[in-house]
Amino acid sequence: MNKIVLIAFAITVLTTGLFAQERTLGKIDFPNSGDAAAQADFMEGMKFLHNFEYADAARAFKRAREIDPDFAMAYYGEAKSHNHPLWFQQDRKAAMEVLNGLGNTVAERQAKAGSQIEKDLLMSLEILYGNTKESEGKPKEERDLMYLDFMEQLHERYPEDHEITAFYGLAILGSAHEGRDYAIYMRAAAELMDVWNENPEHPGAAHYLIHSFDDPVHAPLGLPMAKAYSRIAPSAAHAQHMTSHIFLALGMWDGVIDANIVARDVQTNRQKELGEATTVCGHYPWWLEYGYLQEGDAASAEQVLSKCYERISGEPGSSELWHFAVMRGHYVADTKDWKAADSFNAEFTPGTRGAVNYYFTSALAALHLDRMDEAKQALDKLMETPESVERNIQMDQIKAIMLVKEGHQNEGIELLTKTAEVEAGLPIDFGPPVIVKPSYELLGDVLSEMGKYDEANAAYNKQLERTPERRRSLSGLNE
Image (tube, rainbow, N blue to C red; front, side):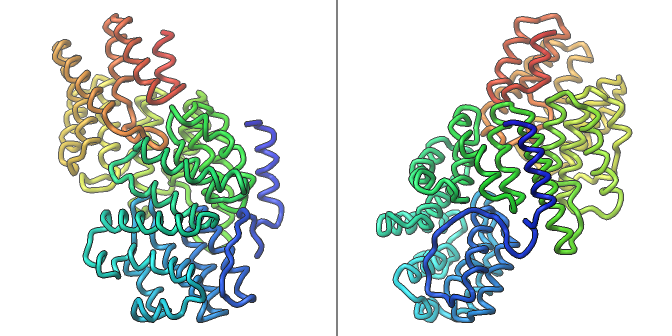
């Protein structure tokens, strides 16, 4: 992506009226029975929904139903804003509070719908939230699949309806409960392409197709959507960020950096408009820092991390702590500035979200500084954190390096090789590695230090299959 164009676009976003009442969020067509006076707010809500700006979507739908208290689709949209398919989150209680405002029973709510298609859309939520005889009492994962089956039926009944097709595609993506699944994603893409081809400004089509192609193998197919999506919905911070999913999967670091600068600034302006605290330890700064690190711009990466560090010195939330820990990990591991782990220290308990990456990074840095006692203390803390595959992988990484440093090279390499194989069996991350030092890259580093360059290069190449153009793996090949 042309950097000058992106910078110019960012200036446009920040200096024009995109944060006034009328926002640019894409183009959709959603005929409905609501009052004409409520249409602008309703349509804005639907567009925000497609852009995963869920809080703004809920606010817009609330305005629509305040204008028209019997506007069934406004209740539908607001209730839908409490289900986040790709994040596997659902607030059924909040959704039911909205639906109960329309009617206390399924029958009452159906009676408020102005057409058969509106009845069908409302019924999809009754299934999703467990209000039908078949879905009642079922766990979320089962209800997701029942909802998917119903959306498939609606798609067959209304094949020309772009909103139903888009939400059907999203439902397919939301059924990947075990993580990245190529078959599921390609099934979603096959449905969504029709909407994209007929309306290349549809925010949902562009957005969900990017998710469908969000991996190193399929990312080239998502480049047209990535290049278009920021222009489709410049008022949505998430839309600006989502383009970088494709750029990261392809190792296009300029695109990752520029997209997340714009996303961060759009988000900041919106938060100021709402009177909310500005996010400095969050998703967009994390991706921005990672992009800088992959470009070799350690100074800019440190600036992003330092702002986050200032924030967590106060009273940070769990999400902020998690992002700080992973950002600290990437900075220390990717710059090999091991002493920076001391500079960016914080109070973490083993049960704190982010503790795994925090203690792993502390242990890794201590090992490289030959401070074995500190490394063992950090490993002990790491072992106290809640068990997970990612925790176990990072724990074994530290144990393997300790074995090598203690003279047990064969045992260390054997453990690290097994660890790399376990990590390779996990779905590829949707973004920067959550395991801050990828195992095959670490294996390559250790083998290279032993002078086993051919084996090291094989390890680096395996890592590059999962994380294309990753700076440290490429530099390992060239050392």
